[in-house]
Image (tube, rainbow, N blue to C red; front, top):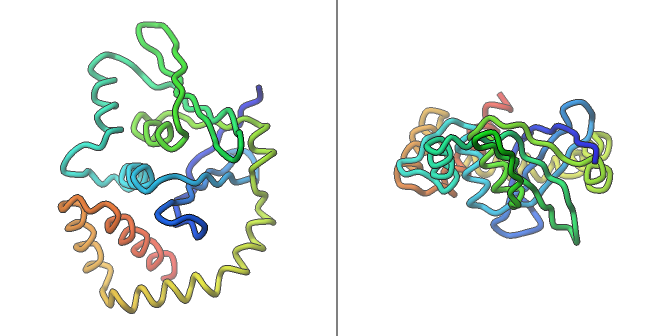
Length: 197
C-alpha cells in the first residue's frame, strides 16, 4: 500500500457538525489536502501542543507520552490507512525493545499522539485519491465562503474589542481555568488577527 506523508495545515470549526472541528492535513510532496472531522477534545489536544501551550494538568495524550517514555516505547509513525462509510481509521506504529507493534486508533487520537512524539503522519494513496481535495477545488470553496468568514471574524473581533495583548491574557486565563474550548476560540481569533495584519 502506497503511503504519502502529510502534515497538519490547521484546524477550523466545522460548519456541518456542532462542536466538531475539521483537521486539515496537507500532502508534503503534492497539492492535495485531506479534511478529517474530529471532536472538540481531540482538536484542543492537538492545537494546544501545536501552539506549545502547556495545560495545568496533562491531557490523556500527554499521559500516554509520559507512560511511553517511562517504559521506552517510541512512536515511529501514524498511518491513516482505511476509510469506510466516511469514517477514517488509523494505526499508531510503535517500537519497544526492538519489536514493532501496530495499534488501531482513531485518526484524531493518533495525530494528537504523533505531535507529542514528533512522529511523521502518513495517509494511504487510496484514501488521498478518494477523500483528498486539490488546491483548485479549495480555492473555489474559499471564494464562496470568504464573505461569510470575514464578516464573522470582524463581528467576533468587534465583540472582543481587545488588543492582541488582551486576547493573549484571556487565552492564558482560559488555559489556567482549563476551559480549553474558550482557549481554542481565542487562539483562533489571535491567529486570524495576526494573519489579517
